[in-house]
Image (cartoon, rainbow, N blue to C red; front, side, top):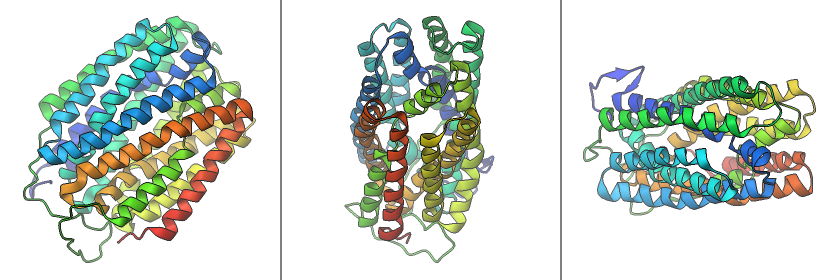
Length: 409
């Protein structure tokens, strides 16, 4: 945990600051390459939406099992950094192979390897953020980390848009040459991210930490005894996350929806720049608010915004509506992503953080397999709008469950 008197950078601990930069550089790379991958599959390799959904679902879902294992292992070893380094390195090494991809099987292999790397690093990294932060500032730290991650996405997407424009102007379909240029350009930031992690992030000793997280409000703190199992509130929260995620399919379908409504590849990338810019601007303020008012209220607001944005994407017919809805979708992410991770820390004892983040990421990731397959089938056999109506409905169910069954403290 953050030591008393430790110098802060931009209001967060040194570790959180540099982990933010690691995520910033990684997202510059990933957004340049993977955002347009569904268009590469659809436009260049001529793959249908059910296969695109299957690729995303397999990659995310299967790799999510490793999030559970790596989180548990980081608790057992008392070490977070080595697993985090290994995960980022694996993802970095997989990306260049997309340059020679000529079938969807190769794309699946690369995407799977990249997500395995994410699976290995995610839970230990989030636990390292929590270990480097005092309980009363957990929302701020996770908000900062999400803001940096998403600022990297903004830059990566802006660079991708520039490259696509230079290669193919405002063509409606992605070309092979443009995709290869994006892959080459995205390798450098990924390598730099691993170097920052290696040389600037420190392992945290957890022997002197509290045995439970403080509530996210100014209420008197009640110490919880050390536990050998995760408590009921956390398990119920995982159930709500699964329900929510079943309607939150891969963002590949947002890309396809934008193209479906007449957006060029260049404009699709600009849409995601707008989405991520709103996300980045909202993330840290949302975390600070959750430190003061409680996580649950903030999450409910975020999920409500998600349901409205998905409902709108189902109904949208004009381009200006899509711009507005992508910004609204970014607001949902900014409000919810960091706060849900901080909420996990609130619900579990310190010595179980790695395991808890593993379960959290695994539950979300595994749910993406059926979510993406369902989305692809709804798109192809009913209508593109049906994918988004289903997502809005599941968000409503999960939000109701969160309100009725999970107490904040």
